[in-house]
Amino acid sequence: MHNNHQKFDSQSIAGKVRELFLQHGIGKRQHAKELSRILDLSFSHAHRKLKGQSPWTLEQINSVALALGETPAAIVDILPDSEPVSTTMAQDAIFLLAGVALPCVAHIGCELMGGKLVEYVGLQLDGQWSVYRAVDAPLGKRFAVELIEIRPGHIEDDRLSIAVLDDAHQAADELTKYLNSQGFNAVAFYDVGSFCQALSKNPFDGYVLDWLIGQETAQSCIETIRTSDHADAPILVLTGQLGTDQRESEIARAMRDHDVLGPYEKPVRLHVIEAALQRCFNL
Image (tube, rainbow, N blue to C red):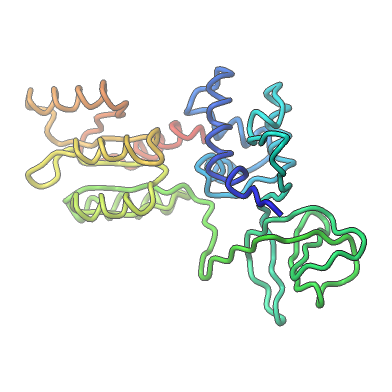
């Protein structure tokens, strides 16, 4: 059987949903809020879906298409009639194996009819998919399982991730601690190297950057963010250097060229930064 996993992967679907939102006049900063409304999800869950970090179900694709007055084909690629298509779709599921329940992403295919033999099957009960070896599965309507993805040790975190970059360790730690207490998942960085290394592995949902890091500015960090997989993430800039014309012009240029917010003067007012982030994410 021809497998069409590439056509149905989360990144591809997320990208097409973002494109459709823009075509329908929904601004980038409103995407997660609109998706959470359509699918009745938490804001952070909707945000992860739009980043391609959470699998999409056929029902969710249909719901988004209906809300926008589009057909599902506008979101999911349809191959030519001459090319056979698998109807598999990634689903959050529980893989039950040898008495152990493992969270997984299962690519569920069509219902099994006529005694067709497969190694793994999926059953759905009250909206929850469970995957079994076929010989161990309970009675019920069975579906073919073509791919099972298990991510050991991964714990889903619904909090919005925020990177805080400031070479003043105490200031970075204080802001990070405060944001975590307010429901964010904030991580402190104290130099450009460690920050860019972390960014290359996994972009954050938002950024709070001190403009002056050691002997360099945050300009290169901002440029790196704007070319990352999450290029439209909000960036807040902090500075204690507003008294100099050079610093003001540098920051003003970054605001114009890269949609940077601020500058917010140091010492940081914690409640102001929290409020700014909440506004960025429409919380």
